[in-house]
Amino acid sequence: MIRSASTYLMFTGQAADALAFYTGVFPESTSSVRPGPVYMADWNLAGHNVMLVDSPPVHDFTFTPSTSLFVEFEDAASLDAAFGTLSEGGKVFMPLDNYGFSQRFGWIADKFGVSWQLNLA
Image 1: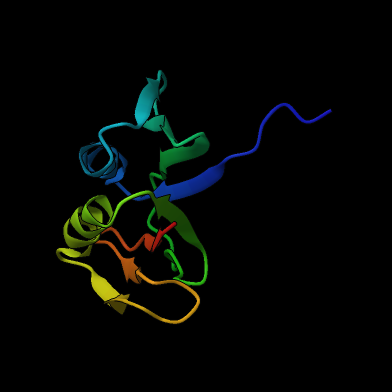
Image 2: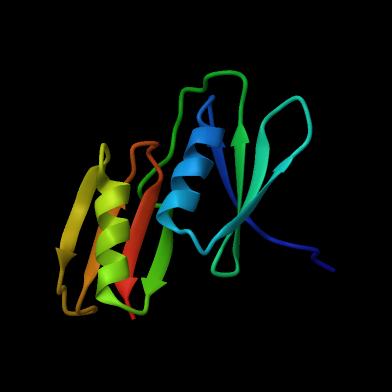
């Protein structure tokens, strides 16, 4: 029987900064840091579990936009605020717009390289 499933985000020294950033963007989210020699944290966003981990060695890979966190909002103001903050220092793949499949959608990578798809329900 499966105990749990989480999205796993591996950073190289930026996990604590990323967690502080994400809890600022999504103040309704919750988090806890796991004790241990390597920084590990659990973050919950609207019932979705995300693990943030710092890997001591630097790797030849990083995040890819093809794997992203898809967040659906109830109101445009909250979506716009999150999009604005997450895109600062990042890269916009699809600016906020009506793309037919959604009346308001945007896709970005934040300053840490994590990809986000933000959608108005």
